[in-house]
Image (tube, rainbow, N blue to C red):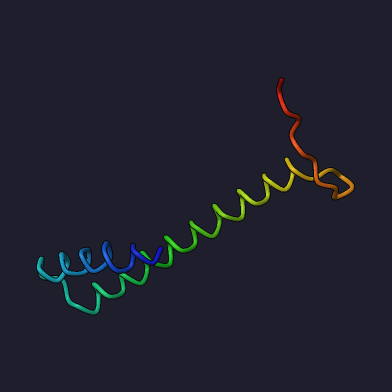
Length: 70
């Protein structure tokens, strides 16, 4: 996420400005895209944690370790 803001978004904003879009509109697009990406990362992280919780904890909230295959 940190590298994305430095690399990808200024390129998008610069491209819009070079194409003739007003700078304020380019900034609004930049903010909107950043919010969408942040939201999707947050939702994905939440879903991964939720699925992991179901797989690794029992109904009594005890840690369930996977059995080793021999």
